[in-house]
Length: 201
Image 1 (cartoon, rainbow, N blue to C red):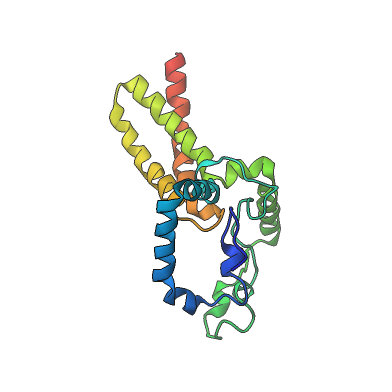
Image 2: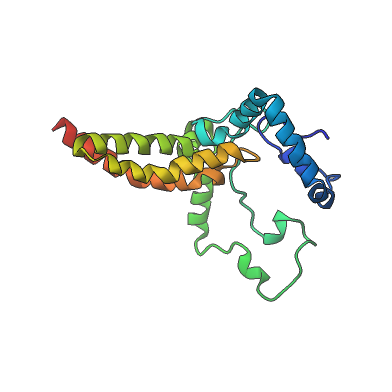
């Protein structure tokens, strides 16, 4: 079937003629095919995983390749917009899942900032996990060097595990797959600044 490429499998699995039930039925055959390709052409598998798992290791997105840009979360006013106007059953609490900002001006400001953050100049810093992984590794290296305590590298386990898992099995360049390193890295930044100053002092 056509649709998937190096960066993403979404064009394939979200096609109108893609049969999810049939896909589940054929899962054993697909797994057997995958294992055979892994044994016969491991270089191709590794090359493909590095490309599709770029969200785990490459700080910047590939703007010029289909599916290579960072996929951000959708911003829609009504819940039914995600799946279609007739795909969600009506129930009393449905409206509670729709946007209802307390302040329209603040919501407009946040929305403008959100869209601005999608530009390449900010996307790599705001939405790409790898840059925060590398910043965290640097912070831990500086802390270990100045403190003489290699056990601080235990903190890196979560990020290493995340990067490894994403490289092994990911479907597209979706920022959410590397969201935890963004938060961890942001929290580690003060540690890097503190120990960097201590080292210089």
